Length: 154
Figure 1 (cartoon, rainbow, N blue to C red):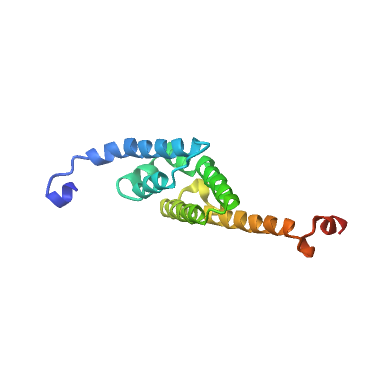
Figure 2 (cartoon, rainbow, N blue to C red):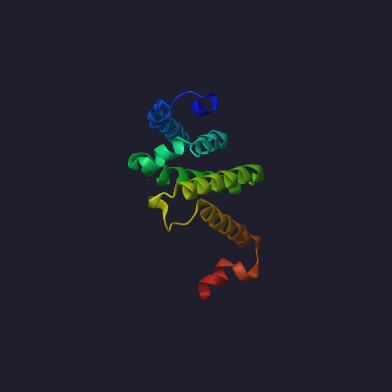
């Protein structure tokens, strides 16, 4: 913003960036720790903000901040919310959680977090959970190929 206004760079944005990132991560962590009422929109907005300079550089430049972002708590919470939405048949919520997973994966890829290198993406995990949920739904439907009695005899 200073450059656009023709003001000299004081370095203030870079100094404040780690504090702003910390604030966003605290909000994400607070949402992730909720047992009910997980607010997808809040998490999406926080993750989207981290893609902007100088916040992006602050995450990459700080081991502590990148560790917190790459941590499993948010991913686990999204997976739990996804499973619950599948069980409830809430397709709108399932879609929102898939969008959130896409944003998270985009952020991780953009920031090139070493902690996530080689790991499955959150979208891949949600696809797996969706497939498992679909298979579980077929078992009680009486489909002979998925009959638990038949499967246990193999």
